[in-house]
Length: 207
Length: 207
Image (cartoon, rainbow over all chains, first blue to last red; front, side, top):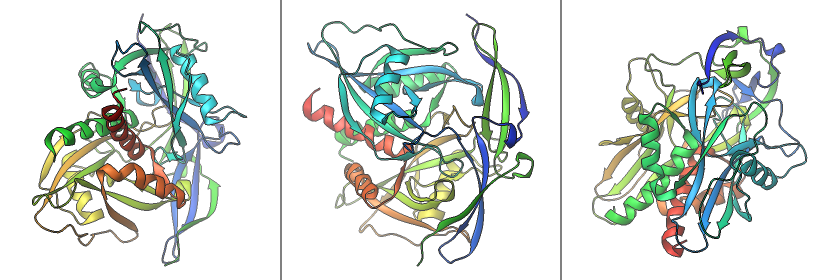
């Protein structure tokens, strides 16, 4: 199958944009002085006040035959014209809780059905110097009885997402291998792997 | 000192924007069909091809008197009209390497001088469904001989940043406390703390 690629990029007038808008704000700094800041925002935020969730699926072997694993996705992202490795994620639909979105999107993008929610992060902002985008990270439990196999995805038309199971302890090494193959890595997924790696290093070295 | 706050927000025409632009691209999906995607981009990217770095400072006690610690910052972010807890970070200036930016920005925002670079992440994308923003995470070594004290910052005029030392093993608890106090958390910092926490949990429970 041929790969996705960007064929043309052009300026977009804010008035014609549907999915992202440009804003300018005036704010008061701590001295009382007024300053300006430009940023982008999604006009699609639901009444929950939260744009999106990312999903950390804990694939847990009930027989103990498999090490703790999670699911990452590979997806072409037009804004960066590259294939990106990310956690499964999705925009929150009107009326959904973040946890409902997490369970729905995990099943759509990977086929896995979570048995429950382990924890939900505080409100997070994605790139707060540039956009108002926000999200929560929802950790879900996905126990499996015997063998670990990829179920069938339930993608929307026009969605092309490759889901992959990775052993959590090998995530850092997997991301290095992705870099070597020309993928870029989502910053949040990389920071997750960096935190995991640092905990392991501190334990070994007693830094 | 009074707090910062947004006093007005208005639509911004892309032609008038200096710091963030709107773009529309046409891309080919894997079936050969052409699709459209709207996104925001920074027009300020240096010739390095990388917008920014975040800095994970490893504060390391040479006497072993203090546990491994790092530095986080509190900063008002106008796009979200909230105080955000983040890793130190900054835009890469023309001619700088990511590592040079990391060492410079760490000293400006926190006063700490790194003794060297431990590792640099692959190229990361911040929110690749919405923007083309990219970055690297640079881990730096900050050994200190006796006591751990906050040095004086070297902020630019108009920068109001509070730097704080936190014990790495207590980062997750600190972020929960920040949430309780009304801060929002940068998604990358939260994912780092989540990865660290999961490594500790897996070690304890042998999930």
